Amino acid sequence: MVAEVKALHANDDEIARMQAIFQAQREAFRKHPYPTGEERLEHLSRIKPVLLEHMESICEALNDDFGARSYDETKLAEVMTSIEGIKYYSKHLRKWMKPQKRKVGAAQWPGSAFVTYQPKGVVGIVTPWNYPMYLAIGPMLGALAAGNRVMIKMSEFTPRAGELLQRLLGEIFPEDHVAVINGEADVAQAFTQLPFDHILFTGSTNVGRHVMRAAAENLTPVTLELGGKSPCIIGENFPMKDAVERISFGKCFNAGQTCVSPDYILCPRNRIDDFIATFTEQVAGMYPTMRDNPDLTSVVNERQYTRLQGYLKDAEAKGAKVVQVNPANEDFSGTHKIPFTMVLDVTDDMDIAHDEIFGPLMIVQPYDSLDEAIQYVNDRPRPLALYYFDWNMANANHVLNNTHSGGVCLNDTMTHVGVDDIPFGGVGPSGMGAYHGHEGFLTFSHAKGVFKKGRYNATKNILPPFGRGFHKFIYKFMLK
Image (cartoon, rainbow, N blue to C red; front, side):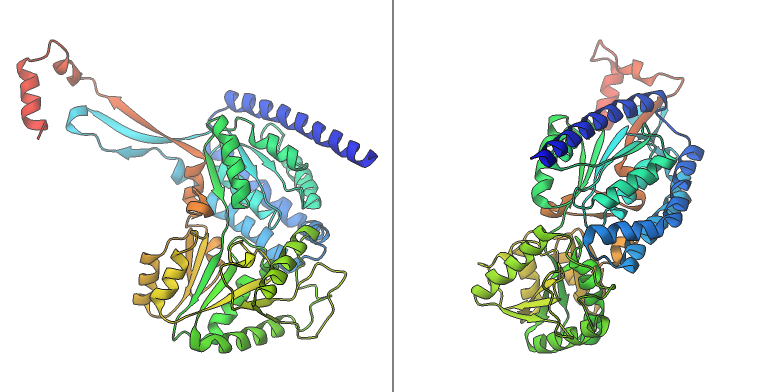
């Protein structure tokens, strides 16, 4: 009881701190609403040295949060991707900041038009637990490049990472510029109710609905990076070894706890056995042992572990076939690790068929024609990512043109997320809006259209009284 009371007070204190920081950021933005290119580049330059200097601490914090998190996966997915983003924004920022000339029509002559990209103000970023550093720093880079102030709400499920990022960013930014907020779900709820100038949320579709509802009260624009069941379609003639090697990267990285992790495989019916055998061999080669293997990340907590085990129990009870890859035949009791598991003969009445898996389980579903596979995808909510394996570009274009997803990898999985020069975002239930690259700068900027009138005022010719000769001249040549 005492611990619960302390936790409530801690959350109340964090909410009060958060509200004070928000007001301070608003006031600071009003005093300096348009940072120069030099200032923005200097802001971005502060982040890289901190990430490199504290890389081991970042790895340790995430290992503590997950119970077992591969240090190499943290370096690749949290640190390296963030540094690449800093380089990309720094390289292109000056070009993006330049006003963009636009054309004027005859009705506005003589005059000129342009679009200037103005910082929105105070941006709120809500970060999930699966990649807490990268999914905090990535959108922060876009917001800072666009000239904004930033507040970041970290996930309560990765408290060590949250505490560390708060300390690291606190060393290089004042709180009226960049601030990290920690705390439980009630803090997150209060965070999304603040009248931000933009909110970016990464997380589940269900929570995304709550975020959008809260933002609507303040008419705050939102970018929602959600998830969904991202499919892999293996083409009829694509080499199975190549497909499995690339699919296993996306499925095994972070133990499948990635919003664009392959959720289900659509495999030609006559190649199902080949896929199962090849995937088993590939994963066994990557993880000859699993229980104490530092390369294998654990399921993050008991809640997620129970959810995933529930999918397996429900599927098996309803007739699914479960194939586990456990090369050393280890006992995983007492841990949150789950061996990579293929689930076959899945039917629509199973929970795993509807919910995003977000873990080391994967559905394997047969198909008899490419159009049948496309129909299977289109019968379900639009996913965040789609993966198609085929060297035949005619088939690839057929898939691209006849499916909807936030993004696509052809002949690979997940790597499109790391391409800084293309947008990343969802569609429909998998999200709205995009960031990364130029789209990130645009997301956090207000595109302000400006028209500049010339010295001669042609508008005087259309002032009342109407019906004069010039009006007739305009109607004759422009109303047609």
